[in-house]
Image (cartoon, rainbow, N blue to C red; front, side, top):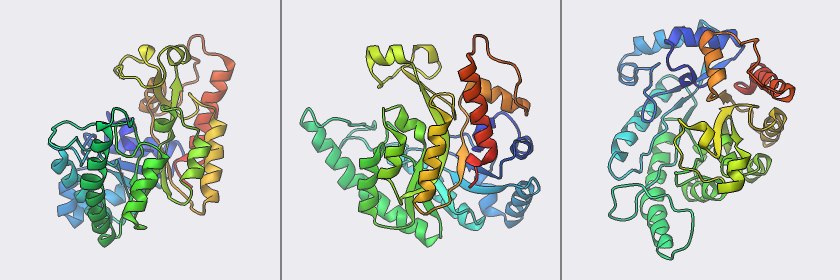
Length: 325
C-alpha cells in the first residue's frame, strides 16, 4: 500500500498494519504534493547508515519497498524547479536503496508567458491548439527526454501516472509522451480511479497501454449518478464536499465492481509483466479501519448487502495481492 494512506500514523505502525493485512510491499511518498511523513529524503541521501536502518525496519515486517513516489508538478512555471529537485533526489535515493521504480506525474505547463498551469482539453477555441503545441513541444518533451536520460543513468524506472489536470491524462496523451521519449526507462503507473472519473473503461485503457504499464495503484472512483446525469463528469467541487460532487475517490471495490479491477490485473499480467499493485485508500470509513489496524465488522447505516459484499471482496482482493504480484 501507499504509506500516505496512513499518514497520521508513525512509520512503525504503518509497517505493522501493512504486515497484519498480509501485504508484501509498500510505496513511500518522498515529497512534493505529499508531506512525506514517513521518510526524511535528505537524511537518507546523505547517510548510508540511515538507509540501512530504514531498509531493516521495512524488512523486519516481511515487507519490501516497491516504489518511491514524488508526485508533483515539475513543469509548473513557478514551483516546478522545486518539484523537479525533489523528483531527482527521489531518483537518486531509489538507486541507492535498490528501489526499482519512482512514480510521478507528467506535470502541467502554463501557456507561454503565464504563471499558472493551463489544462487544455479542447481544440476550440483555436488558440487552445497553440497553447498545447507550446506545452508539448517546447516544455514537456524536452524536459522528459532529459529526465528519462537522468533516470536511466541511475538505473531507475519512472512510472508516469495519467491524471486529470496533467498534460498526460489519458491513453492518447500517455502514448504521445512515451513515443516522444522513446526510452525503456519510462512507463506508465495506472491508477484506474483517475480515468474512471473521466468516463474511461479500464479494460480498454489497459489494452491501449499494453506493454507500457509498469506499476499500478489499486484505487477506485464512485460516480454520483444523479449529479453525473445533471452536470456530467467534470467537477470542480471541493473534495471535502463529497455529497455535492459528481464523483469521489474510494477504496477498491466501493465504486466499480471489484471483479472488473481483478480482470484488469489479469490483462496486465497478460502483457508480459508481473506488477506491484499498491492500494491507495481514500474512502473515509476504510481509512478509519486501517488507522485502528483491523477491519470493522459493523455495517454502515443503510448499507445494502451488495455494497457489503463489494466492500468485503475489495478487502479480500487487497489481502490476496493487489499490492503485490
